[in-house]
Length: 481
Ligand code: GDP
Image (cartoon, rainbow, N blue to C red; front, side, top):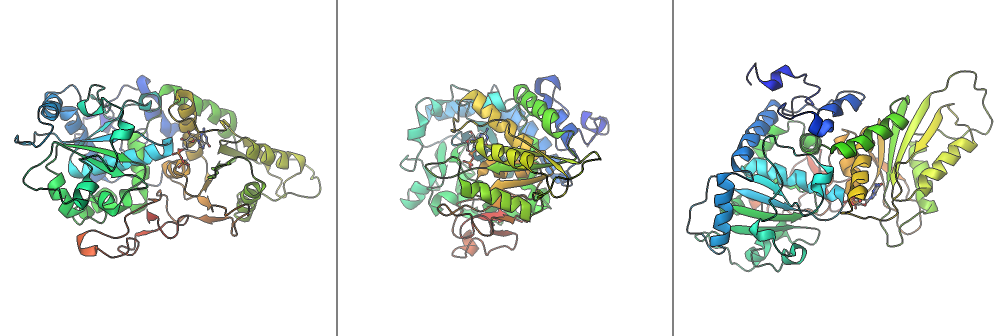
């Protein structure tokens, strides 16, 4: 890098170990350069120089191909004129369009996955702007935009229904129907990477599929899973991934610190709550409680599970039977609870108010919101969700709920190895109540059953020692370690 560059003159911490560019104006997105101030210690996970240089060259490519460029106009023009099969050569820019769907955790995991795929294949990522991405996240790439212009020709109708497995250009469906013809290249393809995807959909990144797909200028992807662990199955991507991420369990951690910067409104919510409840405590603990069942709400067996997990792991003290003589200034441990339901934190708060703790520590319990029901795409609701994900990431230790992408994003951004609360069966507290994760990566909840090409037929959790089943989804999930 150039010695005189803005990056070289800015403190490394402020740029989160060099992963951020110094090219943005600070006021328009305070979180970008102020985030490092709230972290109690600098992250022990440093981005590789190779990742940093790859990001800088991606930024140049995005500026050249992004909305409002000649290249973008040409590429979209081709889409309109030539909906069917292209006779034209592919222009210099190729794109992947991310469609927003599901909750915020799902969205952040898939944005990071799609961005990494774009980095590996030299495509431009553009994000569906029909939802409120812009109200919660700042632009990540300087001098351009990642928002898909609203007049993009393939986004004019109601897409939720249009892009599905029945869509004529759905890649997995074309593979199944043997309608892929390597001599006629479509202008666009749709990739369906949801929980109901078939192996044919999930394995679009394999080497032989990529030979064809690389020639297609527009990919449109709908996803709700963190598909990063499976990208290692492609032997062409693998050496590149190893160089980008020598520490394999911090892929999402780095991608998220590069891509996700809460808007000023959300940052205000984060910093106000942080200074009110967390910054002055001697220690902090985050507990994220997600209840996956139709009649979700407060359950005694879940409450018992939280207490038993945190006490056994020595994250929270037991209760004492006798009042203690408090002639010294006690240590304060702040517990940040996030949940749709306020009852869990109310109970925890009462528990530690009504009785002293056996260690003499004071336990201060706080919960920013209790929205009761998921209201994705309502601006303030989504802003609160992002604020809480970030607040959780700022705690010293974290307990999260199995299967919850909200929790995955929080611990991974924080560089924390979480205690995962097992998913209860019926109304029983699981035994053991939780398990410590050995990785800070999110889990790919519904991965392909096997590997690419040479590893076809080989169980996808048995191909590499560093791609293993998740602690919380034993028989199907995949996680990098
Ligand atoms: P997942 O369903 O647990 O995998 O996580 P998602 O984030 O994809 O979807 C859940 C959505 O419900 C969130 O995005 C929020 O809108 C809402 N939600 C769930 N738990 C919480 C919480 O603890 N706090 C807030 N503010 N919202 C939550």
